[in-house]
Image 1 (cartoon, rainbow, N blue to C red):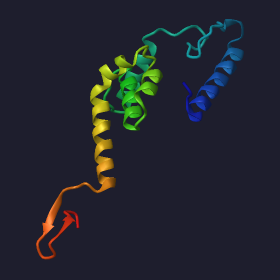
Image 2 (image 1 turned 90 degrees about the vertical axis):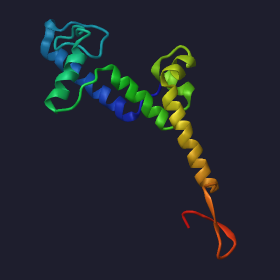
Image 3 (image 1 turned 60 degrees about the vertical axis):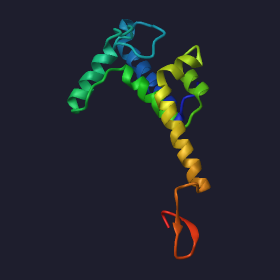
Image 4 (image 1 turned 45 degrees about the vertical axis):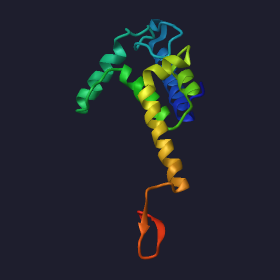
Length: 142
């Protein structure tokens, strides 16, 4: 999957900061293949991002729904942007499109309803009324 330039720039900046931290730590730095680590390069505990996000939300008086809710937000945002199901499925790392459609069926249905309304609007198939004075049909919005 291709990430936006903004994300790649942020990750590149983070990697540079991590390299500077490694220099400062000297022989205490632990080399790993991880991008997100403790201050000394060791892999972070799996619960660390969860706890960090929880504290961030608390400090900013935001509701906290857990890390996994970010994944659902990401998927829903792609669907609402009319990204096709195969691409959404790939972006989420699902091995089968049916997994994506099963989990996000409601979001795809809502997106399809909006698409239908949009094309109906473009084609001007909205409700009509009789204009009794002229004997012509006109749009209700007229």
